[in-house]
Length: 164
Image: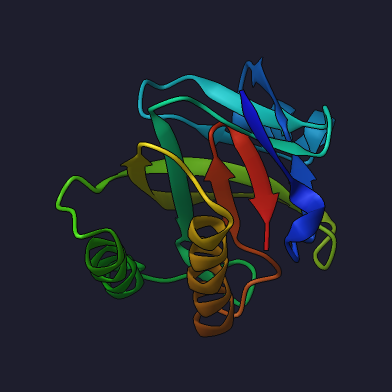
């Protein structure tokens, strides 16, 4: 299995492990955050090592689009979701990009409380993942971060979570 060192990227933090938790609140309290996947299971990403693992022929890159601006004010994320989906379709010349609406939790240092919000996860499946692919997702995450006044935006790389 090929590995890429996460230190090559400007992540605020990187978590390469994944642990199932009972609910979003538990994930935020115990691990700083959690995400409900499209099957309804709730996972927290946890520290393991500094490496992004690349599989032989099926890899997933995901972008998390929040439903808030200015940390916790509700907003409609449909325009940002559509923009990012269009950009990914152009970049990867693919209509196989999927997205689903779910929920995530995280602990806001600014507000000193758990935030549970709706998020849209946009995923592209690739045969392999390169540093260029990861940097492209970082660019989109920075766009979302600026447009939605976020503390950070998450990307998922084969079950590893990075905050930009």
